[in-house]
Length: 225
Image 1 (cartoon, rainbow, N blue to C red):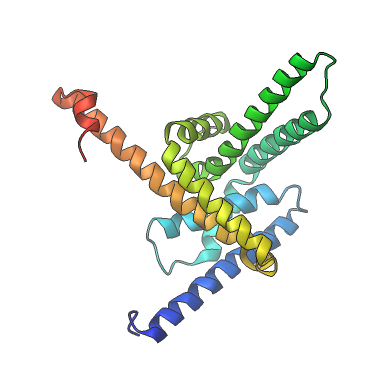
Image 2 (tube, rainbow, N blue to C red):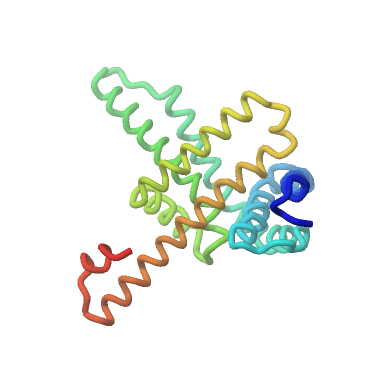
C-alpha cells in the first residue's frame, strides 16, 4: 500500500493507535500481575524498553517478547529504582505541606529549598527511565546523570517539558483517552525526545574525544556543526 496515499496514511495511523493501545494494555496487565506495588516499576521500565526500540527506528518488531524480557530481567532493579523515587517524592510532598518552623524567615528559606528540590525531582523523573533502558548503569548513576542532563541540556529539557504540558492538557481535556493509551503515549513522547538528546550528547562526546586525539581545542570542536 502506498504510504503517501490517504488510505496508506490512515492505515499507518491505525497501526500507531493499536501499537499504543497494546503497549498500554501490557503495562496495565503486568502492573496488576505484580499486585501494583511490585508491578508498576518493572512494567514502566518494560514500556520504555519497547519505545526505545521504536525511537531507534526499528519497525515491525514483536512487542510482547521485548516487554516480557525487560519486565523479567529488570524486576528487582526496576522496583528498587521506582520505590526509591516514590518514597523520596512522598517525603517531599509531606514536607511541602506540613513542615513549619516558628521563624518566618527560616520557614520561607526552608520552603524555597523544598520547592527547588521538588523542581529538580520533577526534572529527574523526565530522564531517569529513558536513561535506565538506554544505558547499563547503577541506580545512583541513573539519578545523577538524569539531573546532569536536565541541567546541562536546558533547551532539550524545555522542549521535553513543553511536550509533557501539551500531553497533560490533552489528558485533562479528553480524559477518556488517558485510560486507553495515556501512559503509553506519554512514555513514547518522552522516550523519543530523550533518545535524541542522548544521541546529541554522545555525538558531542565523540567530537571531544576526537579533539583530544587530533590536538584540537574544545572551543574549536563545539563551534563545528
